Length: 128
Image (tube, rainbow, N blue to C red; front, side, top):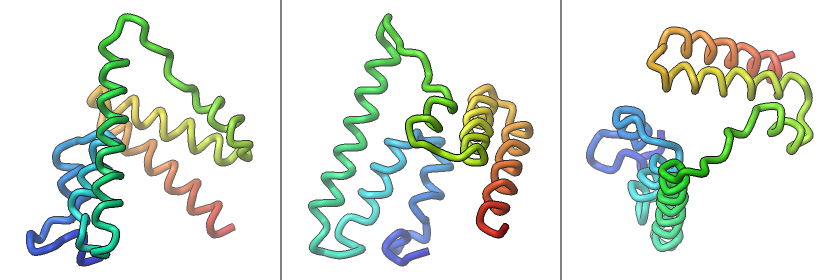
């Protein structure tokens, strides 16, 4: 891992993100806050802006979740169609969505199995 993700703490940003079970937007905010000014001094402001942008995403999502008119989840098939993906990648989206749902329910072993399936599928794509 790059030294700008560890600084002097010995922690990588991803270790903190996973330990704190953060959402994607909040985790990315942590990542950009950790590396701000450490990767490149000239990108310090840019990193802080990205952290702010991700926190705004998180705030807006929390507002959406707490409102009475919650939108339905985006289905993996919709993502695949929108991005014009091949069937193998669509299956990856489905597996990853299922893994996420299982993790949220606390079924970590089943979620791990789904992630293992996704890893195997992606490895087959990379190494045909």
